[in-house]
Length: 396
Ligand SMILES: Nc1ncnc2c1ncn2[C@@H]1O[C@H](COP(=O)(O)OP(=O)(O)O)[C@@H](O)[C@H]1O
Ligand SMILES: [Mg+2]
Image (cartoon, rainbow, N blue to C red; front, side, top):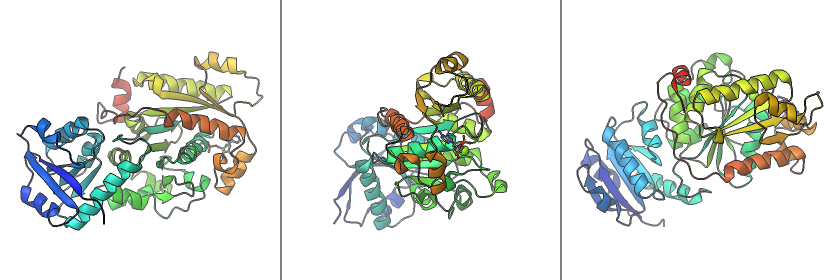
């Protein structure tokens, strides 16, 4: 039998205590230690030895996110779950951004609630970096097509999975996404299906729409037809990112070329950027422009890694030239390798197919960078509702 879960329940201003009691009473594995409401002394309340905190609220309760934030900061290693009566668009994101581990929509029978809470606790224990409420979101960018973004996103994901990290890979190349192909996965369920399923985008719904690769990486496949791409909204992306970041160790997002509104929205919530460039003057010029754009957006340069792909190509440009053109030296260099096109055709990234190759070593070095990163909080919400405006408006 599962261990008893000791629970502290905080009731936000407009929560319905009866509904919460009905959801928590009757299952032998749930033990409510105490209830506190909005006006109680939370510090003393949260000091009590419990396994989990529940913040109960009505759907548009602004006090709820404040309570989540307090509970998370009080003990970052203890999971916080939100219980709400209904879940309109956007609310879930706020809860996850405040640090919630999951959201339960009421009414639900106590046995279902107990199952969800057990999963939350198990997930926390299973995280490679326990105590972290929100995983890093790594956006792989490159201002030009064919530079190796998809190659790097897939290999980085698999290299992290090889260290037992629980990784979700999102294909944001909405029109011509090819992660499914590169990993040999059939698009049984895609981002478009998830979008059609509608909110709330809780962990269970997301999990149902992720396709599992043999490496353990879970993939959110891009829409299969270009006309479906236009249905994917920025609001939707923000909602799913916030939720995904609380259900795994790292979210990696492969992007289309350029700064499309979806890419800008992704940069806005990302914690890390992996900028990919290649050894030709056009690509380097665009990489420089990309780095300058990130700077304009106020992105902290310490969180931008520069990856030079096909770094050993003999095309008349030396590594010194690269540093001169883009005003910084690359952090990682991936060599050209004939096995790479083959590995893509076979659907097994080179880091798994040829672990001793120079390219695989480069991808493991890149994975080191993220595996060793300290715990990070979710990025603050964007400063404006429009990604393009935030691009112009944000300063360091
Ligand atoms: N280092 C490399 N060595 C050999 N082939 C490569 C290398 N990098 C990229 N390629 C080839 O270039 C193609 C395009 O790479 P891809 O990752 O799809 O670019 P992007 O996602 O930036 O458009 C790949 O399918 C692969 O065949
Ligand atoms: Mg690509």
